[in-house]
Length: 196
Image 1 (tube, rainbow, N blue to C red):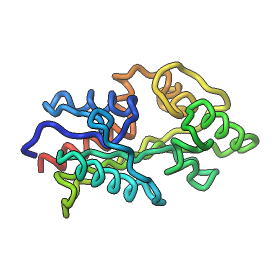
Image 2: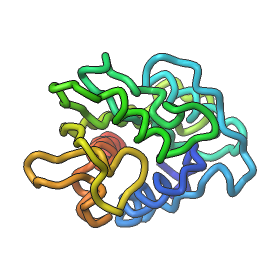
Image 3: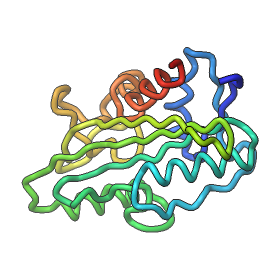
Image 4: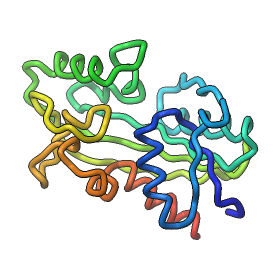
């Protein structure tokens, strides 16, 4: 990569903060598409990969910068992978973490199998027509709790139980989360691919 400035194809401030912290040690500065008044790209696809690629190309086309896009979400086994690619808008528009969490808990009522995974697909394109985008994925395994716990993070973090730590991801410090999460795993893989 010749440029050390990347555009994040997202207006989600929580994601921007997480990615900026993960990229800072290697000297990459990250700006969000909102800073350049770039509108969000449509996300009509059924997979995280297709949505992330569409977002990265859209942002690169409008900015002229290398663009990083993530499509991520919570996949719950007992719900056939839902909310999946619809995680941010699970309870409809406008986006609401509170309503999404409430709907998930409602749909999990009476379900014993509470296994779930946070999934992240990252795509980095050097330019809009990049024929060889860099793609990395991360999966963070856990389960869905009966009631929210913790005050950190965002999204489904208060419902996502990490078995080996006996807490939810919302109970973690941002530093702990940035070392364990699906985004952290995907970013580590992406950076390894960039180096190679």
